[in-house]
Image (tube, rainbow, N blue to C red; front, side):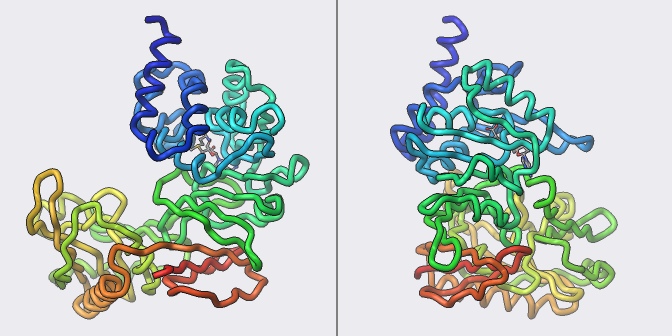
Length: 405
Ligand SMILES: C[S@@+](CC[C@H](N)C(=O)[O-])C[C@H]1O[C@@H](n2cnc3c(N)ncnc32)[C@H](O)[C@@H]1O
């Protein structure tokens, strides 16, 4: 088998992992466009593996550009519903792979403009697109937060870096009836949201959980990390740069942890938007717990090990979600969810979080459908149907997250 045949066979294998979740046109594009051409020098097996392919890192080794995981790419294309003849804008050209897929989907009557912040990355994307024969894609080197008014309005805008807000330019350059798809971080929780224009602003038509490399440039708002304890036993990750009294939190480890169990048992992967339910708690954040502190019995394990466990802080007190195994099998273990409180008000803050989780269990259960609306900050946000989970004020927009249950 030569390289072309091997790549085609690996592409088919890559697609099998999520074929039933995507439409025929997206599948056909992903079977056609050779992903390996956009990650030169990477072994074929890795180019067609299930994970992202990191192509650039900063001085600390943190990824700054990648070809997103194939399942993530497919999910976004599915949400975007790109059609032949569409005018498209992509923010975050990266390797150029997604732009090539978009170019395939819009066909000869459509047009694709993609913007890349990092000039080196933009050059590599141009070369890869030319090598594949998709050089009619226009690659702009610049800050995608400003969009590309000279090429708009656009039927679809896809943002492939993690955004903290909806840039006014994206809303303005989105054609009537158009769709904006972006990974949006609200109170530290990221959903890939497909927005359409509504009477007053933007309203989501779908929202899925996924993770992305954060946006750079004028739209960048880094998450604030607050380390606690001599060995960083705890780290709070807070959505924005609001002032935090780190001195007040410094003594939080001096008191014994206080756990309140909820009586709620779930398989490990339990999320179902309960995170947004908790996101209205003042001080909502993600809490990372050092695994050595857990192994030493100093702190209870966090419910979620990798992305941080949901939690909240208030003054010198912290509460975070924990879990203990109560049954199930090794493939599908069942855990009871609890809340660990630390600091002078640990017990009452833990009880407050438990009350919120219990309300979620009673009112919503596993049936929470999210709708996210964005209103320009200057406009008054109208009230509407459904139960408001959280209202998040950003620089340019007010976001209202509702559940239809
Ligand atoms: C996950 S990668 C994009 C993957 C890409 N779509 C592909 O198919 O390979 C995110 C990219 O967004 C770029 N980026 C970050 N902030 C940006 C901004 N403000 N404007 C344009 N590009 C940006 C990063 O440099 C990085 O290359």
